[in-house]
Image 1 (cartoon, rainbow, N blue to C red):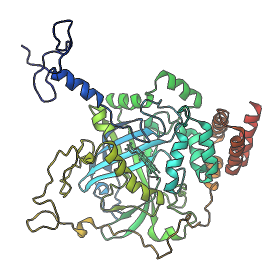
Image 2: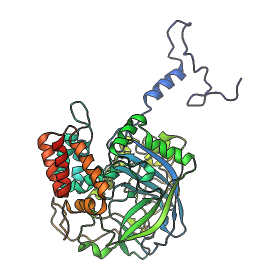
Image 3: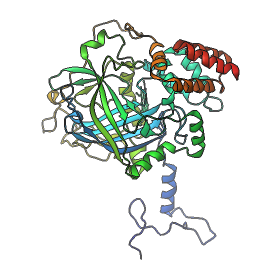
Image 4: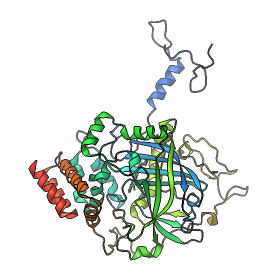
Length: 483
Ligand code: HEM
């Protein structure tokens, strides 16, 4: 008799993993083989729906440590001098499904959560500092244009360029995407950005707008189209494997967090609308201030438990950090918790990667798969029998910005002095990229346009690129013409 015996899910020893219970060696199997029934039923239920976007990813636990005193700008516990906070990071592609190759061209997700003394704080960003649109009602259409066609369920460049060229505000992000950032060499070789502007509030209630930049300490690097295509065949999980191998070999990747701090009053008259997520804020105007460093050191023992069930939510904002009037961010504050409740259940905050490490004193109760009783005597507030009370002082993060009374409308943001759709994209091509990077951009766009894009949409795309940068547009046109 072995001490190391198998049990079923309720701890009862099992007889065999080799043979089902049958009526004689050649007879039918019996329903009373409860272990066999359990194995089949569990197997049928192994999958939860994959994330509707960012389905393929990799993640690890780590530590965030503060290296510079920014307490004059934020009271958030995680950013106080000397603080070290446990955290979880998940990196991902956007449009591909669970099994899709890591090296397909796509923005990369850069999702973080910090288990702070004041609850879970999440920063759910990308490896690019901007996004494809500025109004959330366009997000669903955009994603459908990047995923699969109705007939044949194929990825379809014609859909992608159709959408992009009809949405000129996408130009800045598309320029990043078709440039080197569109295929990072590894997850370790990319930066992460909040993209949105957030609000920091200090202990005295003073407010500052803030943008986050996590700079890779490994350096930023990319794969070319050809390298990425070869790697997609050789190892579809290349980025996932690289992160795992590096951490297991003790090469713990790290990122230094810098912020751009924008005085609260500056937002109104600054030359760009800092709440428009298609825009960056030039460092010449608001330079980077160091905050701290995150280091990833632990690959969780079970991918499904800790990474597939990880739920990152931009509305997880702790005292000292608040949202901004960015319409995309406002929509995301609803969307993520909603999708988590659908994908992994209403009690997703109880799951190991999501459970706060400080004490939870919530009146929330019941629901499917509830593990923990609420830490309260009566399930309602206020009550006369003790229990926690909401405390404005403790939250201390003034509700936010001032909204002038105005008519309810459906409208674009008011334009600031230098706001337009193509200006920053053009500056990225002319001022940030060098000749070799510009050449790669032209090659990437040309190949993309030659791969299943119809003639009228290709024409529109050439116009789009000429609007970004005349020389780039002409070079792409010449490349298309030659082929
Ligand atoms: C994932 C919605 C814009 C970064 C997701 C998911 C949804 C979603 C529903 C799946 C979440 C899950 O199942 O766990 C939206 C909507 C947006 C938007 C409605 C705009 C209105 C953005 C932007 C960024 C971003 C602007 C980056 C700045 C991410 C990341 C993930 C994600 C990194 C993956 C999180 C993870 O690793 O689990 N988004 N998104 N999204 N989104 Fe967005």
